[in-house]
Image (tube, rainbow, N blue to C red; front, side, top):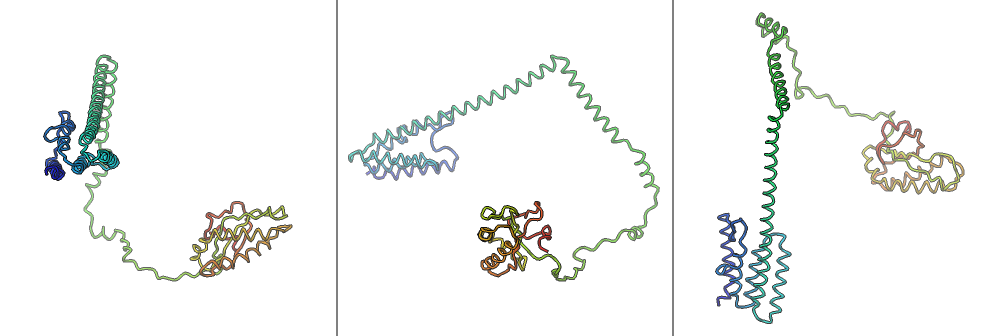
Length: 357
């Protein structure tokens, strides 16, 4: 039957239109004189219109196949998927409610709704295009009127014309003066020229001998002998300084004394700084716990309490490291309020030498 071949023929027809559009760079649908798609002809043309094709569907299956081809050819953009899904669901509802009959009239009504939407979009596009054109023409006319008005005022009012003439005269005088001054040879230049003309030709060999000797390039210079550096035994030991830790004054009975301590962690090798600083949160936790225990019941502040805390914390931290690089911990009382570590955990600089020796 013809109806059974309709979806295939219609798909072939659409494919030919698409190929033709790609080859000729012409629109696949007929155009109006205004340059937009003639949707009335696309849908209602008695020979090639979409509605005329839908009318020929003999079964519900053929009708659905033809409608799906039409919908997918009309809604091809990436953001049209939602609308395609909505139309598909609407079409399936029509087929389910038809009771076995072919709902051609309902399908045609769907197509005419799509036609109305496309015509409204085309009219909105044309209206926006005309509005932009009128705005551009107004700007062009306003610019032309401003130019004409300026020229009219220039010639109507003599003071504007005289002022323009004065400005041009000053500019011309400046250009002439620059040319005259720049082209006049000075006495110094003349003396140099005469002196150069009266000199005898220089001896090339003498000039070469008088020239300073060029320094050898870095590639030709011998490399200094490498001598391994030996750590000065008198230098300050390698230590890590942490930010200030607050003493738990509220837990004890002592009222006078320092409020903060500055922890120093002495290590065997500078390369272990990063390993120790990675334990910074754990170090602060252990220090706070041990300080709270030590200062809970003391009557008077005593630096020996700090030393005892430091001795207990050292082995605990070494147990967290792969290698026991910590040799000693010092909980120092800041000597100066300006002594603040530059980071939470870093290698102690020369600023803190007074604490380390």
